Image (cartoon, rainbow, N blue to C red):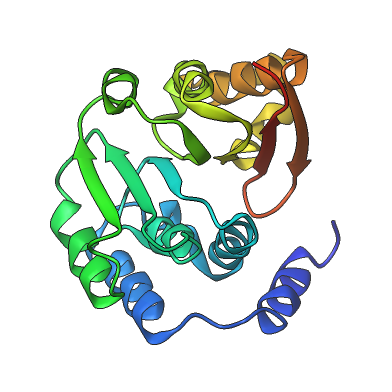
Length: 214
């Protein structure tokens, strides 16, 4: 798209701004992490919050915590007494995420788990209303399999980075495992008769998937 940066700036200008907590988390993430682009940011964060508020879920699962920005956005839509479980393989940033969960008044609504999501999710023994996949790109297809088993019929999966910088548009040129993982995941979703889906070209691509049948 021509003038994409101008369109992006226009979209941000016409989207509710980050509050002080999310802005501080955004700044600290940029100062203290190697790949701050992994953070959802204002536009996607607001979309996640809007979807969660519209659903008013009782149980949310997030695969890939990073510094906790998306968890905060999603948890703000939880119904009274609801919980969000967030899983990350690396506990290095858990303290930073917990700091902002507390500042946002959400520490009692968000449970942090460390380890392999494919092993941990079945052990939670929960039926989730909404699942956000944003973990290791090589494992997206594996995440999807265990997520579908733990998702209520009629529930939704959101998967981030499904464009992977546009690399999925050139499958014959793929050389990195992350891009191949995303491409395989996208093909699985496209061919899965159990789901309804819409591919949103927002930021680095966001897949919205509804489990229509078991």
